[in-house]
Amino acid sequence: MFNKILIANRGEIALRVVRACQELGVRSVAVYSDADANAPHVREADEAVRLGPAPSRESYLLGDAIIAAALKSGAEAIHPGYGFLSEREFFARAVRDAGLAFVGPPAEAIAAMGSKTAARQLAIAAGTPVVPGTTTALVDAAEATAVAEQFGYPVLLKAAAGGGGKGMRVVREAGEIATALDSARREAKNAFGDDAVYVEKYIEGPRHVEIQVLGDQHGTMLHLGERECSVQRRHQKMIEEAPSVAVDAELRARMGAAAVAAARAAGYVNAGTCEFLLARDGQFYFLEMNTRIQVEHPVTELVTGIDLVQWQLRIAAGERLPFVQEEISPRGWAIECRITSEDPSNGFLPSTGTISHLHLPSGPGVRWDGGIETGSTVGLHYDPMLAKLIVWAPTREAAVSRMHRALRELVVEGVETSRDFHLRVMEDAEFRAGAIEIQWLERRLPSLLGVAPPHAEVRVAAIAAALLAHRDRGRGRPGAGALRSSSDAPDSVAAWGRAARVEGLRPS
Ligand code: MV4
Image 1 (cartoon, helix red, strand yellow):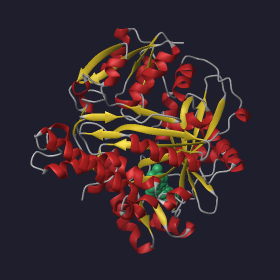
Image 2: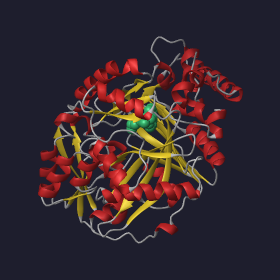
Image 3: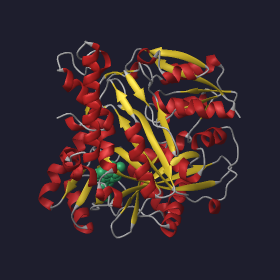
Image 4: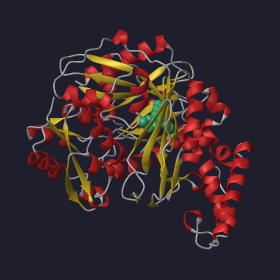
């Protein structure tokens, strides 16, 4: 095992890697921007190196400065986390060329999966099912029309350099194809600097199910089952779970084998994820491979009992995976809610401020992977995800109930968060029935946000508000201190606001 590694990331994932290091007896080096000088990941690591000012381009994206910091501190490896430099071929290569281990896949595997058309060719060669469509970029609208006729409408135009839904256009009839191709090309050029676009048959109403894979440097490649990630908004996942209600042991084995075959074909090593669409008719199709540890990895850890981040480090250090496929199967149910600094009642507008009060949930089956503490400032320089709340329980029903309980324990004051939104989802009949697909959230958002919170909770909040207002009057300082939500709000309104937030309601 390594003696020391550098963590090229921030926030909750940097802390997650620090924790794995501590458990393995590995010393950790944090890096930070000026915005993060007092961040928990900097304090909890054994050492820390300043990179530069707050903007990512001047700090967390400075590959050369990060590699120089690793060499200077005597680190033997770099863990890239997710986002930032984690899926950049040039960075993985530069780390290797500097004589350091990259805690992730080989640069060649990142490159192979980076182009969606190349990934489709790889998957097809490996026998992994892909959505019917082309495996090379389109020449012009005439070719797009001919291909669409062959597969039948609707079709989806996709950016070859893409991912994350950018440069995607649904085309429902021949007359729309030329305009759609132009706009897909323009968007792809803007986002990726590459206007190559290809065509797939458009799959209606599928689930997004992904398979976690783990491969060592000695030829063992295993899958750790699926995660259900259909609850997303504008290509941002909000809730993930493992296993999926739509996947039984037989389908898991087939999807797992398909993911392992695609990963092998790319020469993959370390932790990775194959994304699939699972259609209503039970057919599954490979979409792309994420060549990094993912935000939602904890749900897989909780149902398999395998610590993915520890295994990332062990694999990078040359250890062999000691498991066989047959002994890996999900036990119980895990759900993750992403706690973001966004205001669900205001179109998920990013919210900034200082965390003035934080009360974390705990108790049976509750895990908090966070990057914030009281006093943390939340700005606009980085991703709005503050933390993940993850629960495990023996059944899905019990896990939903446990997540609802844990969300009610959570108090974040100082910025708006997604907490109340998650409470409403946990109370929703369709979600509780597992009747979700990739368009579910956007279709249900208005009704989820418009729904009246449970009567019993409104009652508790009203009583709490009355007591808080009474306490303030007793002090003779109306709206004093923590009770005041805005300087000019009447006392009772401030108290109601605070009580309502604690109960997951919203003052009207
Ligand atoms: C699709 C699709 C339907 N049919 N491909 C969106 C991002 C990129 N990873 C692939 N995406 C999709 N590809 C075909 N042929 C629907 C989506 C899609 C989606 C996929 C996964 C999770 C959320 C999604 C939301 C909208 C569309």
